[in-house]
Length: 622
Image 1 (cartoon, helix red, strand yellow):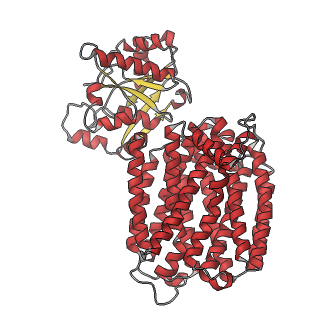
Image 2 (tube, helix red, strand yellow; image 1 turned 90 degrees about the vertical axis):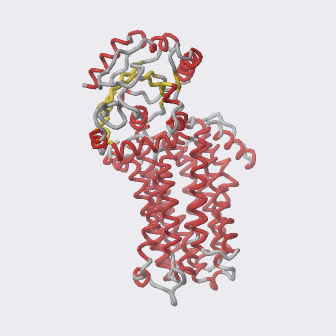
Image 3 (cartoon, rainbow, N blue to C red; image 1 turned 90 degrees about the horizontal axis):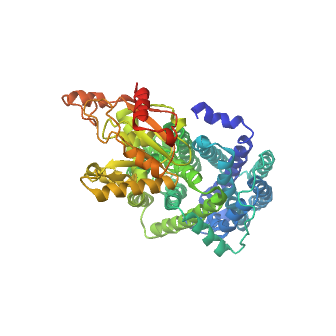
């Protein structure tokens, strides 16, 4: 899907009403929450005698508590019934919740406001599994990244508008206007939900377990069936832990570190929300129509680096008086702080969108909403932990900038741990960097690689990075058959294991490795995976395509699957090839060089021969 195609979804009935309904819900969430937090922080006496720092964390905890209590049931309901029906019921309930909030603001009743905040948490708990579970049912596989990017962009634009509105309304103490706005937006959201097309239930025979504890464990068990999916959920939950620690402290940061007004809090939240929206949209462009989990480590790097700099950019002492927006912007540290917050939001978009799309793609459709609900449970637990952790750290006397440094260090440690458990993330990151820095990749015929099911890919062998280039171009994971000597080489071994490569040696050098390789390939193909071999058996030493060895015929005899010819071009002469010339030529060749991958039509197993496939690869490379 092109960039224009991504926005084309906003004009289509299958997506536009859903987009509007979820964005309006996010707007109301944030308008309610931020007006309450700003009022509690800057107008404490009118609402409560509690310490503002405690009240801010209490409000955050109340909003996410329902995710812990009710996500198990919410996920089952979204799988059991038409997700559109679930969304409509939830949007109808939102009107009643906002009416309660309006009463709370009119009477300056903290108890009513906290109750409505808790109920909006319940609302979001039941909305999320249906929301993310609906996307794979209304979008094509190639639209998932773009669709998720638009949803995240819409969510954070709604956050931006809700946050801006909260700053304006809180500053004017327009309680009647706040209540009217909350109710009006809820009504419009319900009307939009009525236009969402109906979809079939994913698991109509599912029996609902109304026990919150057993249903919760059932959903988590469903998520744990796939290790990459479950670890992706943990990665998303960590992102919410990180985000909660940073964003929850912003009002306290502005009040006690900078000594600035409510409008500066709004400015910072708007800055952050705009960056997440932009980062989400850029994901679709940077990923090139496929789910590019290589962006996730890239996002981790930015989240750590900008949090560290935000801590270092903070002033040593607060201003002598409360700073308005203009006065804050005149401070020497102001723009650096805004850039750091923007960087956190931007790289947060790079981090989260591919993970959501990966979970949707790799989860069984009949269990997807329950897996999304498991994500909500984990997110809630991590966010509750973040609220408790933030309150504990601040209670010890440490400052908000010191808390930011601790958060950055924790993010680095968690990232290293997760990527060591799932090296596929690191592999995709290296592949993504390769084709976005060293090379520029032209792709042709990628639609010939099936979206699902087994196939054997055969390709000419030009360089040491052939596997990385093919991985970067293909949406699906590929199992490469790799010469055992290269597989075991220092540095390469980590990447090879991460991509689950299959080492192979000649029958003469190591009969055991030779036989195990064929057994592994057969198992991968029987499991519906893509397997790629380089049938020349070695890297080219002159740039030509050597004769194909007959080993592929044994593979096809044991597991007859379609054979797809690929051709790589432009890599001969690079530092990664066995080009015999001097080093400076290949080095200059490798800087932003244009390379290509061309995929041909599949050849039936019974028609495939080494000679025919070599001819196809030669024709494609030409």
